[in-house]
Image 1 (cartoon, rainbow, N blue to C red):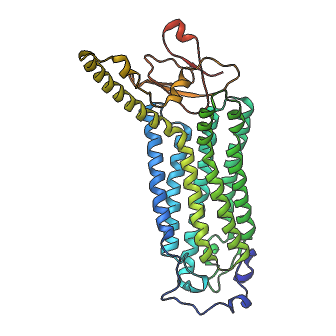
Image 2: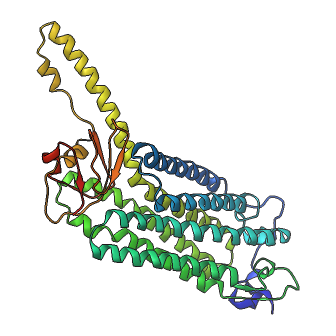
Image 3: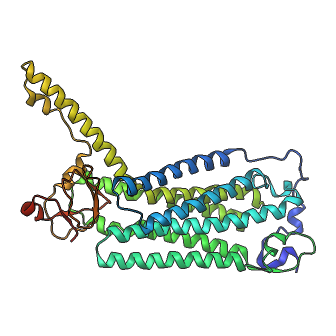
Amino acid sequence: MTAETAGGMRFPPPEVTATWPKPNYIDPERRGPANLIVQTTLIIIVTIFVAVRLYARLVITKAGLGLDDVTIVISWIFAIGLTICVVLASVQYGWDVHIWDLPPEDRVASRKVSWIGLVFYAVSAALSKAAILIFYLRILVSRFDKIVTKIALAIVMIFMVFTLLVLFFECRPFGYYWEILVPGAKGTCLDETAYMVAIGAGGLVLDIAIFVIPFRSLAKLKIRLSQKLQVLALFSAGLFVIVASCVRIYYNELVFIKTYDVTWHGYMTWMWAAIEVHVSIICACVPACRAFVASWNTTASKASKASKASKSSKSSRTGINPGRAAKNYNPIDEDLAELTSRSPQNGSHANVTVGSLKSGRSAEFGDGIDGGVTVQMEVLQYNENRFEERTGKKEVSVV
């Protein structure tokens, strides 16, 4: 079997290669350093978000690591692997030049890096989706929403396994995937065009489904408009993942259906694949990072209050009305504070993480705490029990 007809692998026919310019292996046209800059920037930002997420979970709320935290860390590790592959492919192995300018000796290494990058992408993309869905299971209380989320989680994991099986078994023998351009190599491969387009479309459908799942509960929240917009903005970050997935699919179609210049256009495919994965990880970290922001604001608020109290004390000694100074104090994170004091509302659903900055202790899902200073919502809404009225302690309940 020749390379041109091997299992549907797309290789240019002679009439196409006849139109190509003379190869330039010395000083070919290149895409430039954009990919390297984008990948470096993304990996730094994602690493910061993951670190803040872990700090918030372990130090601020003291909730410990959950399954979604472990999942997102593994996704981040594979995202780093994907970034390394993308940088190597575009800088070292010709994924930034036209296919006719790619030296024959680099074609095997180029396809090896491409295959490894696909494995990293499949695992990282799936696990970032899984982390978001596991987070949904913690904050969505409706039985219907939980069932839908569990079904989506199962589909994501099956999709990942299916993608990996295709990558490992698409060519027989296994190494024929990167030896397919070597003269005299023998083997068979699946139709790469069909399964790559199918995998891209399937990933986009999952991204849209994950984005839509929580909005049923969000629509039922009985909170003021400004608070609802904040929560909606928190979840709407997933739109960036959908946009990145759509752009990647466009370049996939360009590479596998509309052109034979796979290395030149593959440059953009790899860039947007990495953007999609990194943005997905960031979206998964945003809700957990709210505890870090709330803690920072609370600390600043305490410092401001102490400073103004000191000034008020000095003012009282000089005849200035201390009440006037006290009126200027504006608590940080007012929306969060108001939610923590909201009276019970029937039919509302939520999950929260409760933390006491004084005691350093935290509790989840209805555990009482002493001397509560802050309540870090993990996102939707909660109701306060009358337990506080009876005992003087604060208890948060999920209904």
